[in-house]
Image (cartoon, rainbow over all chains, first blue to last red; front, side, top):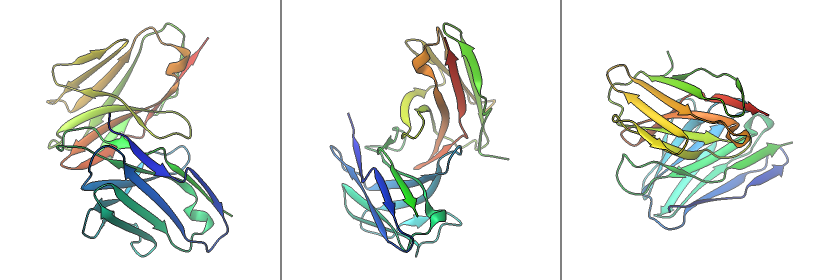
Length: 116
Length: 108
């Protein structure tokens, strides 16, 4: 079945560091991928929709200059958290869908980001 | 009002019990519906899609009532391994909206 791979799974770094997270669809092409963030004991919140070959669409309240998204190919989207601070520490998850809009999305394993 | 609402629980049930979760959604244009399961510190995993005719997968039964904008999940013969957070998820166009999740704890 469809598989989405996310890397790295865990990042610990100092405040001010920029962190890049990769999301790959392994056996299907995804023109659209999604980036979510989840704080402890809260639900997943959509951050942005990543569109292959065009600019990402950000949800209200998400800083596009802070969270840079690049969807350069049909199988890869990257999220870069620029100049990360402790409040950016969270669980970041990507997802992608193969096929028409009523198909379920498949999620990457998630990236746990801890900023010291 | 949240777009997708769930009782956060926790639901504490003994092994073998039957437990039901409910979910309501506000957007009548919602097109497809899912239940996902999320274990602590893990990504959500698709449990099952939900259809108007109702569907069953082993011990799990999902129901959708479009008129009432209501979705349910029934788990029969609960196992310890069923302990997790269950997310009600609604799809509109290309967008997924998640409920806050219902936490289930199955005790021996």
